[in-house]
Length: 188
Image (cartoon, rainbow, N blue to C red):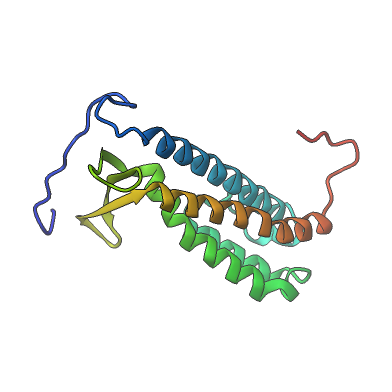
């Protein structure tokens, strides 16, 4: 059930397309960098969760690495509240992961959007996009959200992803210090 009728327009043409503005390549370029930056950041985070789950004190968690950001935040909180060596870093760690969860919304839009056409006459490459998803706790309602995404917005989000990846090193180094890899382990 949709609470308000919404027409879903399908853009079924090649990318790039002859109707793209002359600066569309810049949008595609920055969008690609943004996606790669978030992929690197998510790999960094998954590595940290693997380190946490391999700590002897983490045997109580008995779960795989969570994919959903709320579940990641929950496991992160439990680890930093219960593992003695992590407890002194709890407040900073939880605040950081809450920020990650919030920033992941932009990644989710970029990764799952239904991309429409570029906005004609924009000062910079700007495209309309839409997300469609079930409304939380109301699976009979579909939530439709429209976005207008500019290349400047993508650059800002790219900078945020890169900054978060560097800031996350604090927690990676902390986790590495708790249980270094066995001698002779190869790194890629």
